[in-house]
Amino acid sequence: MTGRADVEDVEDTEDTEDTGEVPVVDTGVYPAVRLPVIELVDVTKVYRTGTLEVEALRGISTVIEESEYVAVMGPSGSGKSTLMHILGCLDVPTAGTYRLAGEDVSSMTEVELAEIRNRRIGFVFQQFNLLPSLNASRNVELPLAYAGIDRAERHERAQIALARVGLEDRVDHRPGELSGGQQQRVAVARALVTDPDLILADEPTGNLDSVSANEMLALFGDLHASGRTVVLITHESDVAAAAQRTVRIRDGNIQVDPVPLGRSR
Ligand code: ADP
Ligand code: MG
Image 1 (tube, rainbow, N blue to C red):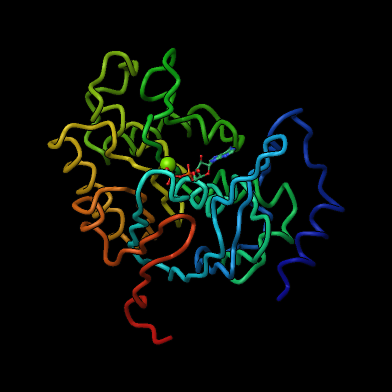
Image 2 (tube, rainbow, N blue to C red):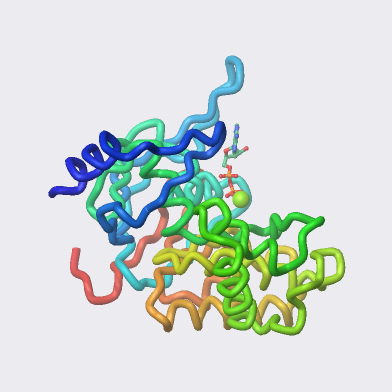
């Protein structure tokens, strides 16, 4: 494994700009971290608020292979979003190990984690999370802006991503001028624009009518068919049915975890 040493060298010699907030990284020089495989070993998450403790995850172990399409299904409060935050490096486990492409996430630097979140993982949320004052194109450009890509390239790549989700004729519309299904497609375009290996979607159809929900699932099917790893979080079995396999969780525990296709355990 040369990854760690290389990163350290880069940090020593490169001046990573301090933006005051999220570290912005020019990743051209970074050793390629191939994503996933995802490996969780006995991952727990305890939220502490004052004297109250909530054990949101109680020892999750699973593997998600490259190019798999996996649904994580469970009732409300079962720990799905907590799991997604950990998978997306938005939060860290209280205990246990999360290995991403063979590398222990807890050993990664903030700069590496920011790079993974910004470039290698595409996030889609139930609430779309678009900025209302920006049109579709500018919303989709945001991750590229954070990555320091220039305006012209940002714009061009946003048009391509919006065309990919069928919104080439809505690029100048603001979120308030779009239907829920169209807003979520903008969010998918934003998730895609960095060409991530892994798409994490947390209840992406939760706020959509059934026609838009089916369009969204068709879109995730396309993304999977084009080689991306897709993790789809849902509490609905008909949504989970779109995936290749379903990991079921309840009360922070895995209930059913079928063996990944092509793998023996
Ligand atoms: P799901 O997405 O399956 O509905 P969550 O992962 O959001 O479940 O929540 C799992 C449990 O953790 C719930 O009991 C929830 O109330 C609790 N929880 C989630 N986020 C926090 C937080 N930031 N602080 C304290 N408790 C939390
Ligand atoms: Mg949730």
